[in-house]
Length: 225
Image (cartoon, rainbow, N blue to C red; front, side, top):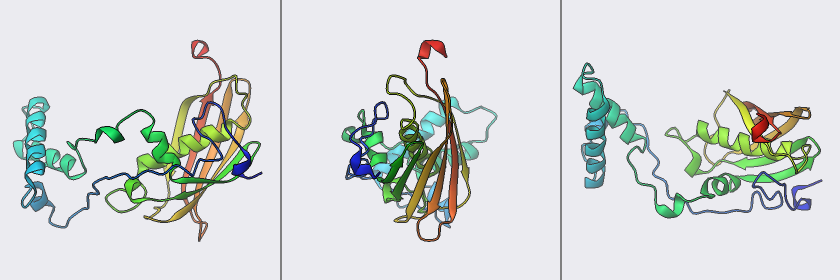
């Protein structure tokens, strides 16, 4: 059956009929690597706000760095952190409860749902890309977790809660910005207290395997863990 036939999957925070329907306008500064890296670390030509962030990071690093660490190394580490967005202030409207699930749901569109199996199409958007303009590794893990929970819910009763015990991710290839990726999740094992889900990410056009994930859930009360 298709995703539009499913109204809700309890415990996942996902309405399967609208998993791909959530939209957000997210503004995120996309850092880009530069060949002139040492020049970038010196923050030449940057705005005053970046200079202030660099100063704050430098002061923070000076307070926690080992005295045996050369000051040049500390400065470069602080510079690298700033170059990938460290020290940035997240706008309040993008830092509230529920923002992260909405962000992930906005990338997904359900194709098929069967007992023990779920297939989605993932569209890689700029706000989940890394400095190389490919899907960020952390985003892969978040997507895998959400899809795995939804898949597990097709076999686990609603009266049981799901607790993620383990999530492994193998990064085999990259998915570039605006690429469509097939995300196929299937239940490998489901018992009274344990459910294991395998998730495969494949490029839609070429069916090339990009990421391979495996999630283990404990479906029991917290007090029993």
